[in-house]
Length: 69
View 1 (cartoon, rainbow, N blue to C red):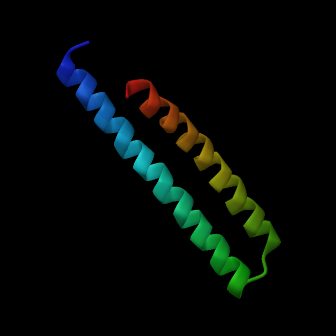
View 2 (cartoon, rainbow, N blue to C red; view 1 turned 90 degrees about the vertical axis):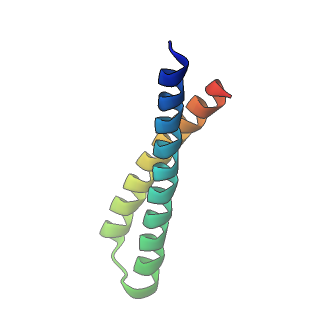
């Protein structure tokens, strides 16, 4: 693989990694707001499920970053 191509892939992985971290923080904020202002267990479970899905993505990108360092 060309060095420029490898560099681009690494850049994409870093951006995706940052996006996953951001998404998790957004869902954590939503859960905090729900727990503070609205007691909606069904919605809370749905957001927890989505947050856990994002954590799986984050784990994947963490592994990809480690492979490339």
